[in-house]
Length: 531
Image (cartoon, rainbow, N blue to C red; front, side, top):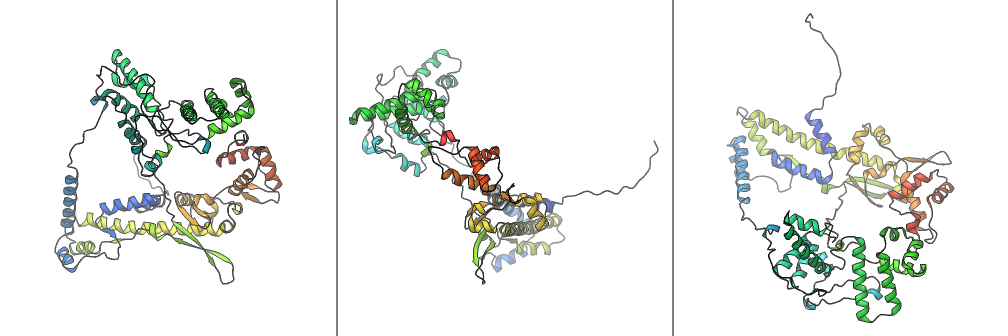
């Protein structure tokens, strides 16, 4: 093969570091952008916040001018390392592990059937309300679970506080604490006692048997605590524990026989397969429970008022507060017509600038060894500020185009939403669809109708009898409107909803109606039917 030289002309797209950073910043959410800015402020000494009170005194500026930028940067790094080292020095905390627990007790406190702490609960119906006082708990020391939940006290902490009042031996208390720590967030004990015992005892059969026995006793103690139903292994047991507590309260208060029969019937229903209750299969429940349909309906209504997740009110759920990137306000024009002004939210826009003093010092020391590297960091700071500004400019342009297209929505609501796809906005602004997709993801707009993600305003269109198209968002809103106004004794089927949409001039198949109904989290007709 003879070697030779040849020329070839080709085109290819090369993403510069500046363009890559611009794309990355564009797709970040507000929270992610704030984290990126904080990280950049730490990494790049030429970047600082543009605060009104920013600026160094003249004497500090003079001292900086007499030093090299590399010396300043190195001094800052050494200070940060010293602070990090001092913060990392702390006394080791002793944690309580299963290995530290003492399982060598000879006896078990308590007699069969006598468990400390009677449980109590709160109910929606006055006939079901009542609070029982525990036999081993002083009423003055009782703590309201709702108040604790507001203080973000976890379920395990609340149960540990109750366990302290049971006056158990060390081994029984350790077993109870271990079960409390094994609960799920909903208050269920999902792991079998055998597996919990095996995880501690390993292959030691005798120790495993002893642990299973202690866990069985601790489970009964756990299920006697508040909230009622905690420590259940499944939903059926959770409901039965609550009904058992209601029956005990009814016996103490001397309720009527009819109410007692209702509670017993509800307990019998929960003893049957739970799928029958979920499907509201009255026919099979009638044959299994031997009760009339009317009594079954009343008992099922009572069960519906029980709490299927005892630990729900103790969950420390982080509130996700949506901070809008764009704010839309109505503005009345001189002609009397209502327009909408679109502006960026100043609270989410980071105010950054290049550190003037560091930049001036760098210009004074052009001959230093680290000048080229530091000049690159200065350029990165300028690029970062420019890319952030470009990010918000693009968000504003896309938001203005959306408001222009969906002006009827801001006046009349979801039913006035128009079909809109990414390509429509991309063609209007001369941008690529991928850019519009990045802009509309995790970016929010505050409007007179509420706060929505920018992607919410996009939706496919369904054909109409007039030859036009209706937005899928408007169709979903119309379906929700139909369901809200339906007769609960005769709920509307998907086929009937499709016919009603057709009467409105919208061609929508039954499968599409079912898909939209599921997106709206509207249950089927069987589950919507009133008891």
